[in-house]
Length: 193
Image 1 (cartoon, one colour):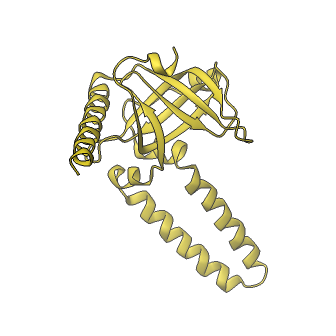
Image 2 (cartoon, rainbow, N blue to C red; image 1 turned 45 degrees about the vertical axis):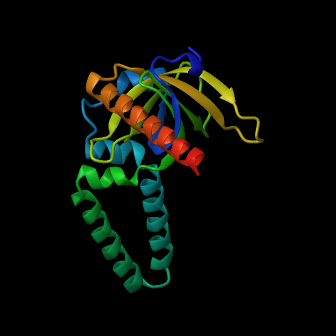
């Protein structure tokens, strides 16, 4: 189903959105939790934090070769930061979801993906359309892959939601309608000037 034939209204919008690509085998072996749990979000969607933690640990190892005292102090500070990260609640953690431009509808989404992806892959999405609501965690099927032809391996990938709850679909439709009203009001304002 091409992205212009998805059900419900579509809108291009910036919103918190993170993704994780899984092969069919990985998706079968790793079911989604029923709600977006903090540990699951940290483990699978906060890759930047994981990469940063590895860099910090590598740097501390190198510093330890020159100064054990400094390495001990840095390790203690890193442990304290990790402790603080583990004590924050899910509403604070979801503020760290990166903003990206998406083409959003109640039936699917299209996003630019930097990694290699196949039509048989599954994509787990973590999106947060409404600031005062829990994020939406949903597994998606790949519908269409369109290379961006910008000299990179990036592609625009159209996805359809797999088993999106009605409550989450309502959140998306409400968000889309609010953005359409906002755009119409802005258009009227610009025309009256």
